[in-house]
Amino acid sequence: MARLAPPFKIVATTIDIEKERRLRTVVTGNLVGILETLLYSRPDGGTRVIYHWYVRVHNPVLNILGFVLEPLFRASHDHVMKEGAVGLQRYCQEILVSGFTP
Image (cartoon, rainbow, N blue to C red; front, side):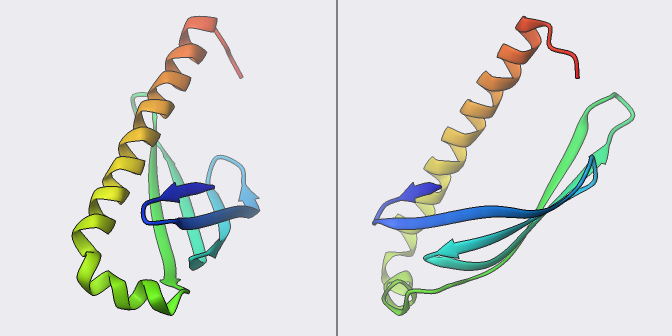
C-alpha cells in the first residue's frame, strides 16, 4: 500500500503470476484497475521490468482536484517513486552482501 499526499490510498493485490515473465495485479482504493508487470531477461544476467498501469481515479473529488493540484500530485508521486527506488536498491544490496542465491 502506498500513501500519498493529499491522503491517497492504493491497494495492490497480485492475482496471477507467470514465473519469471508476468504479474497481474488488481489495484483498488483511490485508483482502480489493473497493473501488468512484465519481466524480461537481459543478456548481462539482469532483468528488465516494465509496468503497464490500466487504472482510473475512483474518487470524483480527486478527479476535480487533479486539475488544480496537479503539481502537488506530481511531487507526491515523484517522492513515492524515489522512496521506492531507494528501498529497492537497499534490498538488492542486502541480498548481494548476504550471498543469497535462488
